[in-house]
Length: 231
Image 1 (cartoon, rainbow, N blue to C red):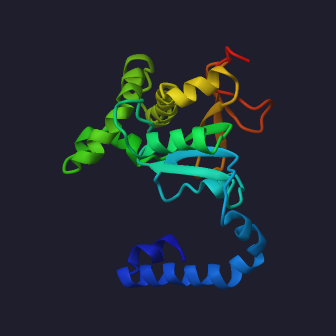
Image 2: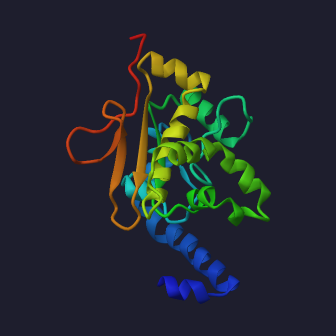
């Protein structure tokens, strides 16, 4: 179905399409991977935790070509990671569970192009009537301030720079979580900051050693993980 067709479909048509997908999964997809799902029925050993935006265009398993059970995914508006202690919410709980219970070795914070949350950070008046979204996006305020005071990019690229700075801000917040800080220090955990371009498929990752985002696949993998202290 094209984007134009989706814009004109009724609520019932939208639901019917979802239900058709459920039936197709059960009858066509599941039988082909029955053995995998049988193993996953009682345990999970994800390769990484993936924190990204709730935007419907971002599919972590698709862009990383991962199978069920590979990613422990947490999604929210703006790929936000609240600093530890600010709130005992879903993101903080998921991080603690992923690190302490599942023992993941990688946490990826992934922003994306054309992010509505970042557009709202640049234009707060667009959040009139959405008080909970406004409150949530205060966790991105540090990124907006960094861009305003340092970027000098009051042009078409402001959104792109803010998107990158927001990923870095959330990585900073991530390191305030005790479970994360402890395993970073011992070299048992690695963190990554990515920005996914919806229109081109490119993913750029933050290189802490160079202080810049670089294209994944162009040379050594850029790493955002600070040097471990207790190895």
